[in-house]
Amino acid sequence: MTFLNRFLGTETRDSTEKRSYSVSDLFLPVNTTPEVSTDTALTNTAVWGCIRILSDNIATLPVNVYEQDGDARLPLTPAPSWAGFSYGNNNRIDVLTQIMTSLLTDGNAYLATYRDAQGIVLFVEVLDPASVTPEFVDGQVEYLLAQADGTEAHLTKMDILHIKGLALPGTIEGLSPIKFHTATIGLSNAATDFGLKYFDNGTVPGGVISVEGEPSDASIKALKASWTQAHGGAGNSNKLAVLTQGMSFSKISANPNEAQFIDTRQFQISDIARIYGVPPHLLADASGSTSWGSGLAEQNTAFIQQSLRPWIERIELSFDWLLHSEGRASNVFVKLNIEGLLRGDFNDRMDGYVKGLQAGIYNIDEVRSKEDMPPLPDGAGLHHNIWSNTIPVD
Image (cartoon, rainbow, N blue to C red; front, side):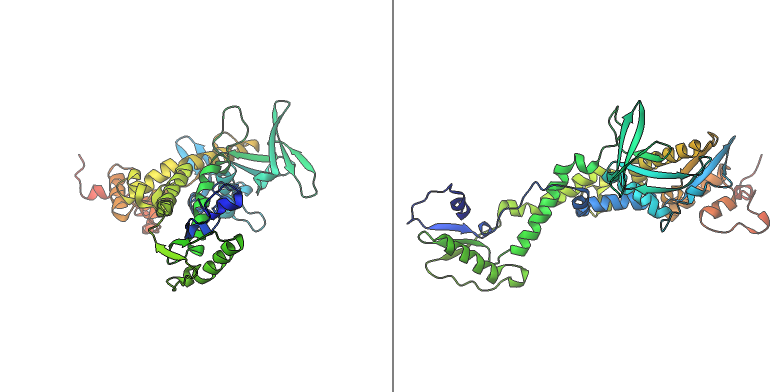
């Protein structure tokens, strides 16, 4: 029993008994179930890291609009004006980052689509998902937008482009990872809070203070204040402790709960990485890296396929709908180019190019273009296949 039980009225003890107080008893326990919001979740390094990794990788992908002409995929000319994602001070990276951050926190991204009189989209703007509420009205989805003046605007899908994350059947909203994993994120935040208090209030030497008799509440508070002032914080480490009036100090080993603090922190990183589907090694956690592949190129490929591709396709399909809502043909579509992410190391790329050239998939100029090199002079590489110089042709 600790002296805190006395304040709660739950302790009875003979006044002549010698009482022992753990140093950690001098501090109130950490709240292990804090309320988690988007802002508090983003203070968690693992949550921030997952959102940053997914957002940055997708936000830096080139966005291209194509027209399928038979087997050929041709750039659409002229490209839609909104596809440049230029609005105010925003650019492509800003817009895609805001889309991904909304999806990874709220589970939904809402884009206001500003159109001309003919219904052509001029530009798009990412809205705060907290300001938009979708609902069914007469069998159609309507979006209620909370405005600065306190009123609500009733908008249709021609005004709002809604991109959803993971969703339940029959629902019109995506599921918020933060809302559905409040306990996991809250536990990780509580562990961080515990660490801050532990190291800030940590008293070295650490152990047990034994006191004869029954000290008063005032004495206990004075002991707490004086001990904290003399030994609290890293700056007071290893200072000499002087005890009087029958008090004695015994050094003890770390509390098992405190000793497991690092293990708890490590587990929470893996747990949050699991929520967002991010390889732990990208969060500087090497404990689970082998499950994503034996080599760096293999791990990166798995990350693209398992983590990035589902988000990329959600965004592409939503942008496709936006194109078609303007009256464009069904063979017009948007692609987020992941070619740069798939480029492995130099040896892997060269091996791939050699096989592509041998199979007639690439010509020299196409390979040079993939390596950001100019074409050979006078079109020499356009139809040149290196294998014609080394392999006899029957």
